[in-house]
Length: 307
Image: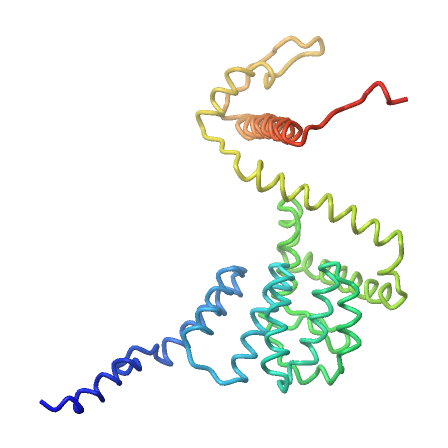
């Protein structure tokens, strides 16, 4: 057999011909799946789905830029991961400079730099930016529009996301329609006042900068305690039973003199027992963590010097 007749089939195999490319139908399903993840507030999973779509499917420049913008906004608005958001915004700016998204991308780059405490870089980016008509930008936010601040739209997805950021004990108060409307009005009022304060230059006010630093420090500490302690505490029914048996009189009904009138069964006080046990475990884990950290950092207290 002449060897030259083998070359063409081998080239086809090397180039991946033969149906190995993902189909357009599969790609459309993947995009719908990613959008559904966004609507269900599964933002990390949505980013992963969009990144798979970008990696595995052949897209034109406009669609690629739009998907980069979608992923960047998820990182910025939902995950509050400003480094990843900045990376995607910069991809659009450098690889698709003629795209109509560029005016909004430039604004978001500045916003990322500001949130990363890189004010000098933000000012430089602002100087380099040529602001165009933001109305050209196609918005990709889930849900119906529930409010407008000038040309900025706030959707039902935005509203639900802000409510989801509240502590669980507060969040459930805003599930019915009337409470949501009240929250929306307060949210818009806050945004208006924030914009007014920025125009007044208060973002550079010394008290504001120091207060923001202190707030950031406390948020970081709370997040650390959440990751290292709170999320790791496990309580099962056996733990609750043992704690109740050891502290049974603490949950009994008592008279004015502290004498037990009635022992309350565990079924009646289970929630309170579980909360008390959780607090005990948390405090114990907290003290152990502080002790280990002080030891590793060679902390010394000079109490005699305190006047």
